[in-house]
Length: 370
Image (cartoon, rainbow, N blue to C red; front, top):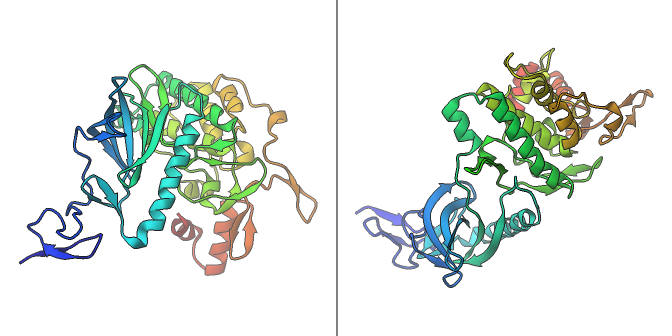
């Protein structure tokens, strides 16, 4: 007879059963709440599943008292199981699950305090069924990623509109010293009402201009800025703008930009765009995708100046302070990359040093790092 071991309590039971007879955890690890499930004593009602991801499950729901649709995000990580309606984890995972719940609550508070038409509204969050839920405005429409898959390449006018509206969202965040850190096509929703809305703030973090910080290396490589590949670096608005530039490049060309580590080895690091792309949009995307921090627009305002056709003013590039080297040469030491107790000014310097130490080619070393 075929048997299973319960992922929660370890009890062995017949595979023909749909749940553990000892603790009630279902054999299926990832199944959603039944449609019609009530939360918060009937305040919210769960509807169909809108999507699943690393976070868990997002449902279309309803605010029963106000009789309006909402989106409900349920924290249901990959290592969780469900016992009835309750989300359960093993004892060894309890602390990690608690930290994830704290992170979700922080995300809800971050979004709720950001006032922008281009940022999804948070209505509520609460703990129930052993996990945490976020209730947000329900937006109909595809993500930018889905639209790129459908059309392959988006018209320049549409891409410019997306850029401008995502800039509204980023400007709102940056004014409160917050970085999104994960701007990408999958995190931009093209709402039916015409708005481009930035979603998923799970990676948002505070930053301090000019200060080297340690941030969790939670990145999407095709869109991540070079400094995001380092455990300690100087982060700022230019980090989000790199991600935005990569996103717009994907929308214009149908493919993500070349990997950063590949571009760092090239003589010409400028990304190529179709000839039909207007000059302002071209300057903004290429400027945002510069590998060196000091060569990028330093703020949303500077990015918009490029987008509108005006060249960036060098006088306003004050985000990255200059430092003096041992030989007296001024340089913008913006991204100290640390490895083996040594620091490197750029990823290219790091790759070259590792290649020299190991006797391997720089291409081989770069591939290993990525």
